[in-house]
Image 1 (tube, helix red, strand yellow):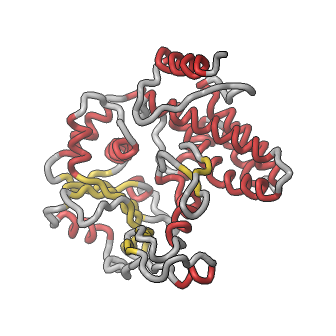
Image 2: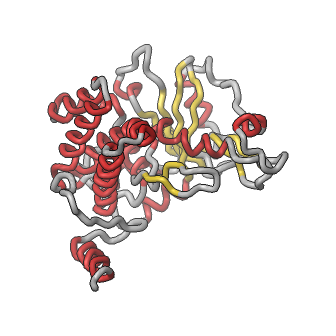
Length: 348
């Protein structure tokens, strides 16, 4: 995931190409802020969460006070399942023909539920009233995270030859099917996914193209953040503070992608590092505990170097590297040709 600033009709916003749920609200809030404060009457859609509405009203409202007059309040609903037990909620889902599958994931599957634990559900639907992706609700007085998927998306994974996921949606599907507890499987699809994904074995769940993209993103963001830190402009300094909030999380998840390890959540990541890579955990702790920007930056640089070690570490000064669109061929031959092409364009 590469983060830079792109020209937006109403200001520069973070550009991200592959947004994984693990990055959470910190990354997603900035573009949503811009969406909510679009000038009224532009004919653009303002959206956040499940609420979608067309901006209407006076044209040219550009001051903050005028924009706030036109902020749309997205609709929500008080949870009707807050007093239901998890078992009862699952039974009700199972009775719905539209529900093709449900996987329970997280601590409840490991008998490790605590007072602070939430519920996590993966729900496969044969049809949806809108393109649902993630929901947050309450079951049994616990916060409940719901990830949605369409049945045709499951079928596409089952039909493809490659056992490795082709995109982030398939990565989630295979991870949840192999690590979660399947509680609804109306037509046996999820069990077939589990068996197919299990064949990956030691080869992991990340394609070479996906790993290349992560390698590029971590290096790219590191170099851009270092560049900005060298400025004496206080705006640049604050921008570094902002970037460190999400680029450090990206490095931690990249550690697992590069080693073809499944991402099973923040807590499991910490437990894994404590057991298998104390140096990486200590670098993260140094970042979290650093009292100033310089200390956080040093820890971030160390995290990036450790995460990228299996792929040769961070780029040396003066490096040229290229990222490719989509699930492109990232073999050494293809990358080499692309690099030669770029260098040839600059020859005198």
